[in-house]
Amino acid sequence: MIITRLEEIDKSKVKVYIDDEYAFLLYQKDLRRFCIDEGNEITVTLYHDLMEDVIFRRAKQKALALLKFMDRSEAELRKKLEDAFYPSQIIERTIAYVYEYGYINDERYTSIYIRNRKHTKSKRIIKSELLTKGINKEIIDNIMMEEYQSETEDPEETAIKKAIYKKKKAPEELEYEEKQKLIASLYRKGFDIEKIRRVLSV
Image (cartoon, rainbow, N blue to C red; front, top):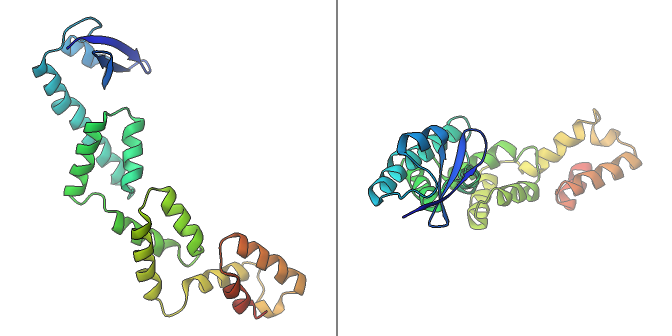
């Protein structure tokens, strides 16, 4: 295997190409340490050691650092690792690693996400946001059903009421024109028109 190209990303990071294919990203200090240079041969043993002891180790560290203060979906974590130029096989192993130890769980993520927003946002908006984050539609639908059925009052109606009381008026105190503007605003935010009318008594 021949190192055919070194591509600088910034002053410290370099993308390494082996036999004209992207292999991994290293720091400048790594190049010196392992004698990586264009035109040099890289042995199978060194390649394996780099992938295991440097690239995979750093990928795990990055994943854990990303998850330390914020729960993320698998798709979000995968995107962060891709953006950091980790090779696909390392990303797959890293995702498997964090799943194995319970560091990511799309069901748990979805449940917490819905629970924290269902009293302020519409179902449609929450679902759209979760889909954008790469959560499977079936997971969203199942957990949304569980989360909303566990409430004695419809969370969407609670969210609508909160939006209304931000106007510092009770529904019955709103003028006709105010109600119409509010209905249009809430509808644009994804709330069900019948629920809006029910809360506003129109």
